[in-house]
Structures are given as C-alpha cells and as structure tokens.
Length: 119
Image (cartoon, rainbow, N blue to C red):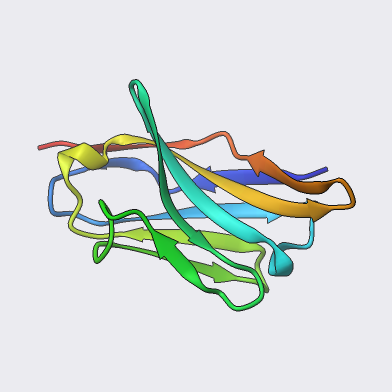
C-alpha cells in the first residue's frame, strides 16, 4: 500500500536550517507530484510542490527564497531544505503524494514531523 514517512524535524534556532525527508513506497514515485504542507494551530498551509516528470517546483510566497523542494527518484524520496527559519515556520510538516488513478487523482499523506523554531 501507499506509504509516506517524514523525518528530519526538530528544534532549531531562528536563522537555522533543517532538511526534511519523506520516504515513499507503494506507488510510481517518479511520475507523481509531491507536496509539502504544514499545520500550525488553526491553520493548514501549502508550502511547496514538485512535479514528477519535469520536476517543476512551486512555493508559497511565505517560503520563497528560503525553502527548496527536491526529489530523488532513485530513492523514492522528496526533500524540503529549509533555511533562514523563522518562528512562524513552526508547525507540523506533512508530505503528500498526488497519485493518478483510473478514478482520477488521489492524495495520500504522511504522519507529519514537528518543526519548532525557537531560541
């Protein structure tokens, strides 16, 4: 079955960096769009996405220039490189996969990883 497992979260000081990973299995990773979202209390927000075929990327305005999404199709893994972290980046970060099926696109989610930015 489809599985997505995030890791790499933790506590970091403002201005610091983290790299989140999402290891996947159970679907054709190389052709699937992968996304990162984050959930702070009362708010879920799109962070970044990367397509499967062309690796085109898209970012929320709030993270442009600081975060980079990338993928390694050989490892079925998507990454989120986060630099210049701010307190407002504190959230649970989720990766998701948009998987095409005969019934249309379906979205699958990982369990999330906590990122806390604090001094």
